[in-house]
Image (cartoon, rainbow, N blue to C red; front, side, top):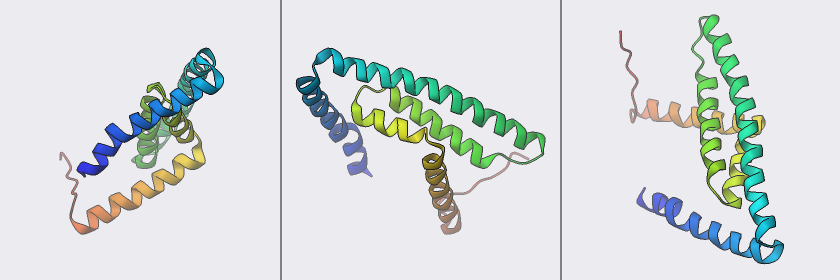
Length: 131
């Protein structure tokens, strides 16, 4: 677990800085800055649109009396996309934009559902109600 966190908080920012320097040398400072700001603004717009769509789906499921588990996971993934998109860098922008694609988000949601299911079956995680 330590190595994953080390990679996440050290190697990825180092790689982002390297790519930004290379992009700045290739495209120029202002073009690179425009790309970073543009993808952030564009991503924020799409996170808002997709978030609103998922919010409506959550409300529809709850009005039917169903627990909106899939929609809640999608909402979490959209939140992660938003956080990633406001992080400066080209790799994080690409990852955030990919999370905005419903097909990719659905694939990740299904993978997470399988992981959670396996963790519950193995007894690594339990859920209890408040009742």
